[in-house]
Image (cartoon, rainbow, N blue to C red; front, side, top):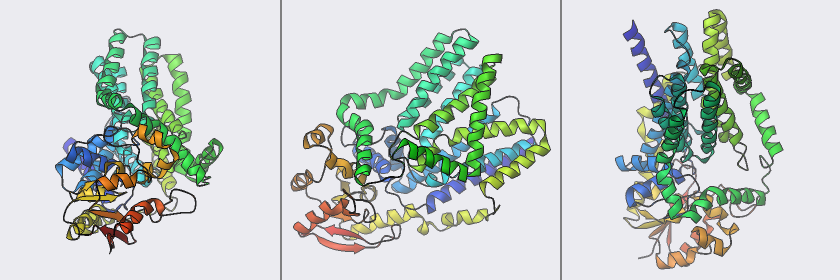
Length: 525
């Protein structure tokens, strides 16, 4: 019987993996992915590093993971999205492992049903469906923050060597922070949790655990710290200055949504109350946060401290969603894995008290996910896996290879350099961030651009005169905002002007993953 349950679990998670892979296959092309994949490609193929060799507007560790995928496969985009799929699968497993760490969980039909429901809710949460198929940095940061929470829970439970659990906790939260900046807030949270554990429970050898946690933080942070020391100004630009410039950019576009704290809060409340599931999750967060804090002070129980840790992780990451301006809906994804853990814990308690009420709660949650209770054929999700030519990453790869019939080799100038890098071309490193650093570059003075290593349209002619491109690829930003208000598509105008002035031959191409034509400008012989 036990082997049968294990077999069914394996098939279930295999199904989850194929579901994630299918999403990665059919998810539309996004210029947001370029900055992560291209950075990995440059690291893998040319040994170029963020900050040191080009301006980069994110924490650096995401590039390492995408460099690994670029190294092991010539299908860079496919490999990056496959990595993303496996990361989501690991997130599902960690969510289940963490909620099962709380107390004794006897194997039963109800528990297995609940495990499947929790995974289903996580994979179909509204914030998850915004990013699930893209190769970004959310999934990797989620994996390591969940691992950090798991190590902290094991540390409190004293199941394994506490110093090693503290060390693992430090390593994982440091990795999460250097993948996605807002997760750095959890470092302070964990220091406070370790301190609370010491002050309230007063265990032996707590100092060694603090030192182990700090050693883990430092060990994982060393490569990033080396980058920051070697390139302090570009690092400061990428993680601090750029975020300010991005706000100014949207202000100059007269963008109004999510710019002020009041509108951010209204947007969150509107989204929360329009989604029954979100309303349930955030209501449970408030309830568990308050009750676990009170019970921990009263009972001084390690279990209540672990409940408090989950709630604190969720609440802290929720607050970080309001920091960027303008706010984006996907920023509210960060707390979702921890909100789902809280939901899982409450369901676990309910299943032990009243099994009938538990199953009614399960139906209520499914109704909250979709009031119409529409059940799609799960096999439909896999159709893109059975027909690879319809997969977005495969179409991107085929398009990159198609360019070779016009430009056999050389350097290509484009705001989406991941595509020529896919086919083995050289690119201009300053384009790694795609349109993002480029569109805000003119907001900096010439002197500050030099200090930060930022290239703008003003420096472009000098760069291209020294090293002219063999081809220029434009049209990816046709539908997106330009440098100033009411000029969509003009981010590539400096590229087009250079091509025309130097008699490049325009060739119209029609990539199926974009939906509109783009232009390949070929250098004259």
